[in-house]
Length: 176
Image (tube, rainbow, N blue to C red):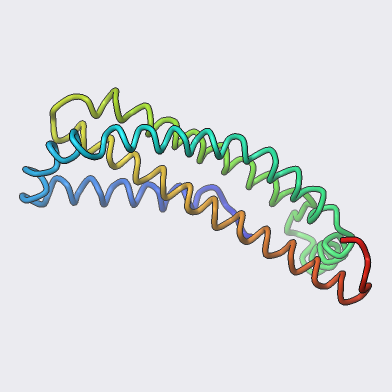
């Protein structure tokens, strides 16, 4: 659960840059891409990214509240956090720090999806390779942010399920 905002942003930037370079440096892609993008990719990317951004926005609140109640307020989690704080007092470990960072990152992911969705009909409509490549690369960068967000949500859920299993082992039949 080591979520730093800089790491996934760097990954999204790398995906963005590599996709732009691939489109500009490959002669075959440079000639075939504009027509393919306009006829097959532009509108599906717009609707898909718009839907994904809206879904993430609605999911964000539910996921964060559920994780707060079930994981970060769990007594076993609090005990483990106190042990980690005692081991490294200089590290400013807070109870809700990981949740706050996940919240910020989900906001960035939503913004990336919505910005990339808007770029498809606005920037991608111009019939130039560089505008279409920019729109496509923004979509790939936004998708890399979404995949990283899903990975972090999965890590938090795995942590939660581990705590549930530990609680069930120590207190069988308890309401988890």
